[in-house]
Amino acid sequence: MSKGLFGTDGVRGRANTYPMTAEMALRLGAAAGRYFRRDRHDSVHRVVIGKDTRLSGYMLENALTAGLTSTGMNVLLLGPVPTPAVGFLTRSMRADVGIMISASHNPAEDNGIKFFGPDGFKLSDEAEAAIESIVAGEIVPAQPANIGRARRIDDGRGRYVEYAKTTFPAGQRLDGLRVVIDCANGAAYRAAPDVLWELGAEVISIGVDPDGRNINAGVGSTHPEACAQAVLAHGAHLGISLDGDADRVIIIDEKGRVADGDQIMALMAARWAEQGRLRGNALVATVMSNLGLEHFLSGRGLRLERTRVGDRYVVERMREGGFNLGGEQSGHIVMTDYATTGDGLIAAMQVLAAMADTGQTASTLAAQFDPVPQMLKNVRYAAGADPLSAAAVRAVIADAEARLAGTGRVLIRKSGTEPLIRVMAEAENEAVLREVVDGIVAAVEKAA
Image (tube, one colour):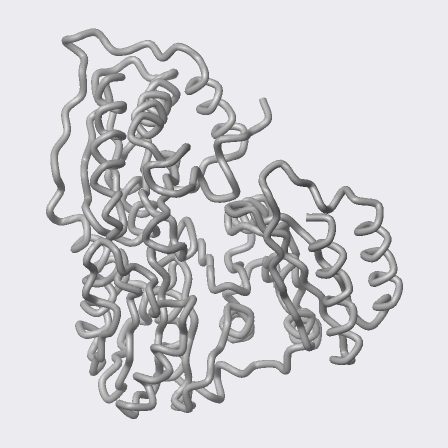
């Protein structure tokens, strides 16, 4: 069955609008419960549910709980925790399934539902399609005596905090380092500052006052300027800017300059390779990562394995090839030695470990390569439109690819979460780059 309800990262949309309604959440919960009970006949069936700080999280949490318990699943409610904490706790608490209620970096009006299997990894396309088919059909409830129970777990966040600290090199501390942490008024607003402080850092926290409506609002990884301003104002050695569910990170150096996921991955890949820790001598990243990263790696005898956009596809390739480091330019950094999904906090701790180990500044460590000039523009299109199928658009794209052959590349794709066409190109000549991108954008806008 082809998927329609699930996107590239679970189910996502505007709260109280299809598919992010209480009714759909209830059916999704019941369908997931039925799917994960299909091969289990004992009486213990467990699911953990985490969420970020959105107001609609209460509604969706209750609806999911009702659906899950109706099919005999026992529900453990974690409250606000980072997405990677749900992956970790799903596995460590021996749950059949984990669920995170979050729309990540999207505004507060949106929300989403992400599923994790019993191994702590996000579900495959096939598993999501199977759940979607159950949603579309008749869901068989449990017998009255087999209805599940629900209870809140008070130490979920604490378990994650203690685990995150174990990923920092033994014997190292952050004493003497002043660190700004921007939690985007999101899921890590308590966990991330606690981890850094307990490791010895002087912590300046921003984006730690959620009110249900201010997640990602002017703060977080989509607004790194807030963290940069705080770094400069406090004379900090490093800034860490997380998104709403803390599965991605942007680094700010002591000069207030931004380092994206490509630079973070370059630093980690180089260090891990020197330490003999980089499996397969390869880094897995998406088609969006900069050509400069590819050149940086090849110069060190390392490979860049590219996937389609979405951290789930990065993880799939990592598991297939036995690789342990991957991620996205947007700041999803996946370290399967430590986590089953992107973990912004643990990735930032790897940068801090490099600073503590080498004594070098963030501005030195977070500028591993010179990026090839890259431009990305988004074009919104109307519901039902398909601008990429227009002959005029295809012709403009073909001309652009021919023009950049050997000196750059073009990547055009639909967003998996919004009605957007993303137009990205890289080229050594910035003037040519602008002409190519603007030409494609104009053609797409006309067709849209």
